[in-house]
Length: 349
Picture 1: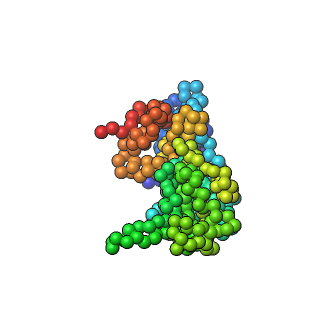
Picture 2: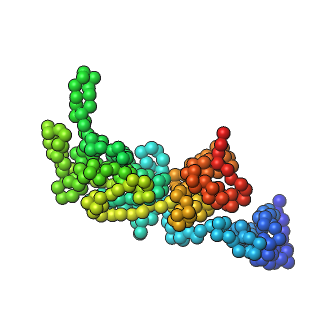
Picture 3: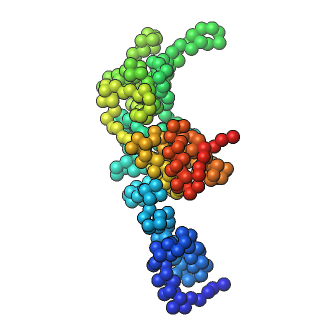
């Protein structure tokens, strides 16, 4: 059924919508209600105008009694260029998930990593856990990638290899990821590189500089392994993790250093609710000022999106709070409570 709107009525509605701030003052949900009512008319021009009004109204939601938004409730401004360009392309990771590109200067991040490999410019990625460091490298190199997950217990044999016992009771030499990548001309990701003892990491120096070789002292018969074309090293680390150490000798071999952060605009594009993104941005600000040691990153935001679909919003929020370090939970709870307008407590059984 089509409803005809008179010129006088249309002018009145336009005038009313232009005063959206006054409407908001009457009741916080009145703009949404009015927009819904107008949307039932089939007047195309007015419907478009109502959509613009709805967007304007959303900007004033969350204002306090004085009409000014509090810092906790404001949505941090997004970089217009990032908002437009983020996530334009996607690449499949070995686990089947898609990685959506981000802008690294004027270039897509995946293409930067691939081009850097072609030019033997080694890359060091650093940033908080869950911001996408590993995902970026996996998207760039796919099934060709060898990976070493570093820790304080990582030894030379974890990279180079060692003897393994055979069913007959003998011992057989087996190459580690570093030698496999070098000999096959494949890329190698040293994840959490900062947690590995610098003395252990010194074995990669010869493969990353002009020598491009490593002599296997643990197995003289193995001899010297020379890196084939295509061999490449990328490293990732969380610089704020306890125990992180990186030697100057190693750092100097990485000619490209970049901090990875969570792409808030991309998170929204991928279906993460705007409110949880806002809360995460506010927590990230507090983390940068050392008020908290943790804030949700891309991994946690995508997990929130998926859990909300299965268990509901309240369940997902409580789970997110429970995943925060215990020392940070009071602040995280306060931010989430302010954002969602109700008291938020961590998940508990």
